[in-house]
Length: 123
Image 1 (cartoon, rainbow, N blue to C red):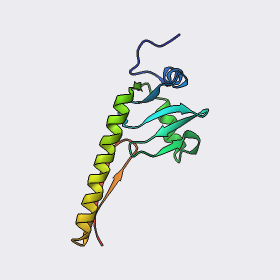
Image 2: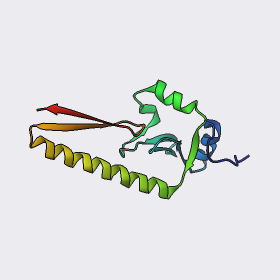
Image 3: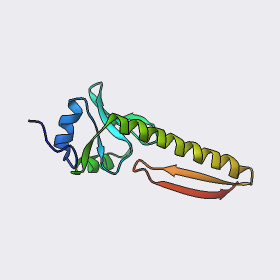
Image 4: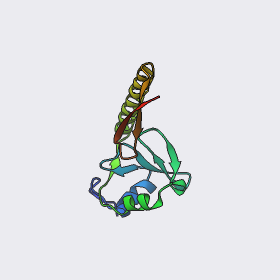
């Protein structure tokens, strides 16, 4: 049985779609998960790809699995968001280089939830 709704699914339905070649994510994520080489590969907003078995925070990963806000990711959406993330990281990198010349630099932290924390520090 194929689920009709491809938004706001529980993981049981998202799992079905993963096994059938679709990419899935939580609605607030910029990254996504895909089934590849007999495992779930996590693609983060920052472009990092890791095997779900190598996640650093198992409790966080399982809390995501337990939600009912999964959706199928369209291929074009993945490409656009990946480019947007690269543009943002490039912008931050440029900001860091500029600020370093002033003996103050900005360090930006990008979380897997797509949030940005900017920390200004003296060198």
